[in-house]
Image (tube, rainbow, N blue to C red; front, side, top):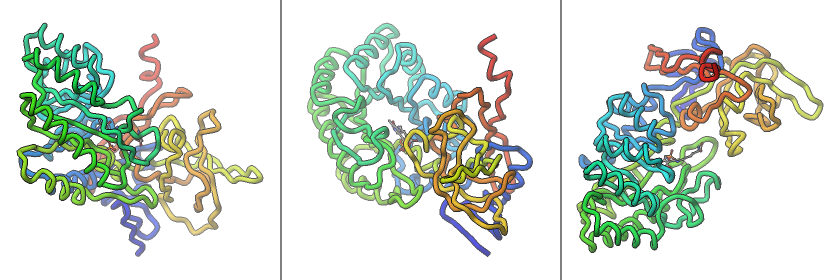
Length: 415
Ligand code: LLP
C-alpha cells in the first residue's frame, strides 16, 4: 500500500482519496473541473491555532482565502472569528450567522457605505489604514452617534521575501500607517470621543516562512500600543495578522505553535489579548481541483496535456508563477512522459504546470493539490467559462457547497 500523507490526501493502491472517498468517484459523479475540500484538514488546521492560543485570544480566519458560506459556518462552529476586507465579505459572515463581535475589517479602500455598514453592525474592530479613513469613520460615527471600536494598522517596514505581489509590510506598499500618519491620527483622536482605538494591528504579507518576521512586527505594534497608551488610549488587542506559509513544494512550513510560543513569551507580562488572521494556513491544504485531460498534444519540443481547468478557474500559476503539485487521480500502468499542463483559455500564459512527469491519457483525471486558499475565490468568467462546482467531504459524506454555474447565471446581469 502506497500511503502519501503530505496534505492528508491519501493515495491508496494508486487511487487518490479525499478522506474516505476515492476522488475518481466524485469526478465521475460531479464532473470536472471540481473543487473539493476536506472537512478534517480544515478542522485540524484551525485546531492547531486554537490549541496554542489562550481563552482571551481570537483567531480571525481571513475570509478572502476562501469565502464559501459553508466553510465560514464550519469555522464559526469551531469558535473562529473572521477578518474581512469588504462590505460583502462582512455580509457573508453575517449571513453565515457568525458572532459580529468576532469580526475585524481590514483593507485600504473601504468605501463610505462599507464603513457605515460595519459601524451599524458594531463589529469588533475596523482596522484603520489611512488618516483619510480615520476622518471618514469619525464623520460616520458622529452622524450615527455611535461609538466605533478601531485598530490602527501599522506598516512596520518589514520585507518578508515572498512574491512581491503578496508582501504588504514594506514601506513602499499601500498597506498600513507610517509613523507620521499615526501621530496625525493620535492628534485627531484627542478631539473625538466616539472612536475608540482598542487594538494595534499589522499584517506583513503572505506565505511567510520564518515566524521571526512576525515577531519583529509584534515588537513594532507593541511600541505603537505603548505610545497610544501614553496618550490615554486603552489597548486591549494586538493583532499580528496572518501570513504563515504552507508547503506547496519544498518551502519551510511554520507551525502555529512555533509562532505562538514566541508571541506568548513576548506578551507574558502584559494584559494584551492576541488576534491572528490566518487564511492560507487553515484552508490551503484542504482543497484540490480536479481536472480532466482533454487531449495529449505533441508539439515537437513540448508535450502538452490539454486540461479542462484554465487560468480563469485557478490563477495562481499564471499570476504568481506558483507551483502546485499535480497528482494522477488513478495511477495507470502506462508509460510516463513529461508534460506541460495547458488550459483551454486563449492566453499563452494559460499553463498551470510545467515539466510534470505523469501517466495520463485523454479522459483521465488529475488533481491540483493545495488549492483551498486563493483558488476558487480568485476565479473569473474569462472566455465565458462557467465557474466549477465545489464539494465538501467529511469522512464518507459529500456536500455540494457551491453548484456549478450555468449559462443563465453568466448572462443574468446583461439581459
Ligand atoms: N490579514 C490581512 C490583512 C491580509 O491582507 C491577508 C491576506 C491575510 C490576513 C491572510 O493571509 P494568509 O494567512 O492567507 O497568508 N492571493 C495571494 C495571497 C494574497 C494575500 C492577501 N492578504 C496568493 O494566492 O498567494
